[in-house]
Amino acid sequence: MSHSSQRSVKRSQTWPDTVATLKMNDVFQEAGRNYITFKGRVGDLSAGGMFFETAEAVPVQSKAEIEINFDPSSKNSNILLKAVGETVRAAKNGVGIRFVEIDLAKLQQCIIARMNKP
Image (cartoon, rainbow, N blue to C red; front, side, top):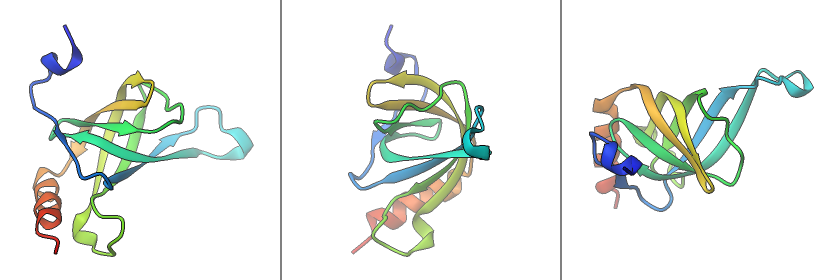
C-alpha cells in the first residue's frame, strides 16, 4: 500500500514558488551550533502535513519548526505560516512532514491571500 493511499487528508500541489524553512536541533552540534536550518520548496500540502523538496539530507523522525512562505517575492506577512512538524519519511528529493502544531485558520488565510494576489 502506498503512502498516499494511507493518508486521511488529500494533499494538494502548491504554487511553484511556495518555499519553506525548517529549523531543527543539531544533534551533532557541529561548530557549537544548536540548530540547523534547511531551505526548500513545498511540493504538496494538506492540513495534516507537507512534502518538503530539498537536495539536502534532512534527518527523519526529527521535530522541526517550519515557516512556509506562500509568496517569497512579497513582503506581505499575511502569506507566512509557522507550524511545528515531524519528519516522517525520506525520499530522494526531500522529506515528508507530519504537522504536530498548525493554525488551520491561518493556513486558510494564507491560501486565500495567495489566490487573491493580483
